Length: 147
Image 1: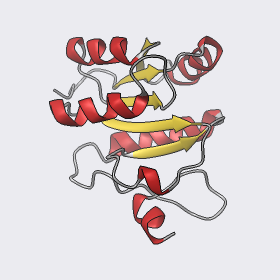
Image 2 (image 1 turned 180 degrees about the vertical axis):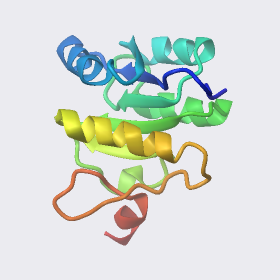
Image 3 (image 1 turned 135 degrees about the vertical axis):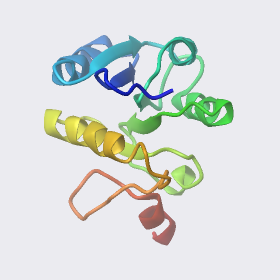
Image 4 (image 1 turned 45 degrees about the horizontal axis):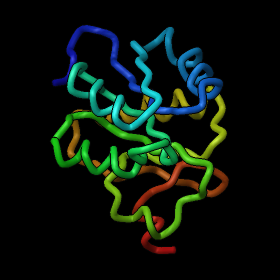
């Protein structure tokens, strides 16, 4: 369910209002931005909207970001997912199935570049291949497996 002529849709799943406000401010001029404060609300919005990219906080009250990601993949939603966390990724994320990983706090450019990169890849089958370079906070699951 990808939208063809409309602005791409980004779902920001973040329980901290100030952070969600920043993400929305940084993205709303280029994308149609929706918000969810919990995993339950995020899954509900995914049922209602044609979401292209999800910015998903890992540490949510109730249903965690990891559980939301599992459900997104199980249900076959056709969206890209960037996990957003204050925790540096470790070996535990290798099998998660995300499309991008952003370490908090991202800056405006990092967040926008991540969304743009995920949208550019949305028609390809290279899910889970995230570009990483030294000094960057973008990680590749392939690079994590070699760590």
